[in-house]
Image 1 (tube, rainbow, N blue to C red):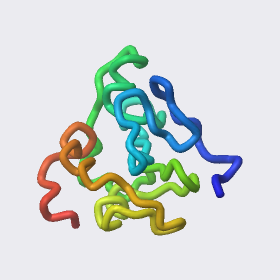
Image 2: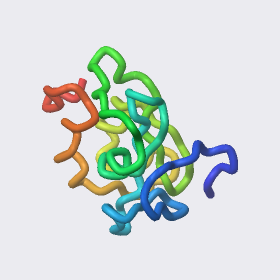
Image 3: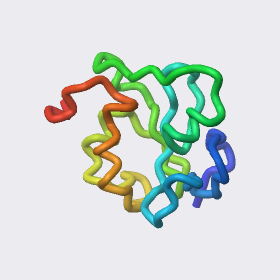
Image 4: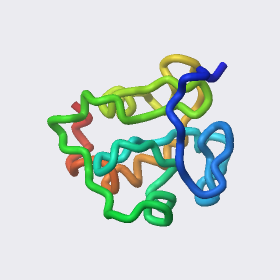
Length: 116
């Protein structure tokens, strides 16, 4: 059950589980807190459409910051926890879209192969 104190997720046509107009498959339930503004967005395209600034990537030294939100239960994960989650929420076991790893470079400093 989603926490009533979960952070707000911004985006284009965002549903209650953080799916948006750009990514709306059943497993598209992750929102990302943008390094540049500290606001959760459903995706990069939503940020591009609604924010008045460019995205900044999270540097590796900050991968222990809580910056990932499970849209199903509202649990916040660190970037490192998310990358090591094996595509499911550690709190509610909701499945995350494994294809999202193809977009890591938009949000996180390069060299994700190590995931450490």
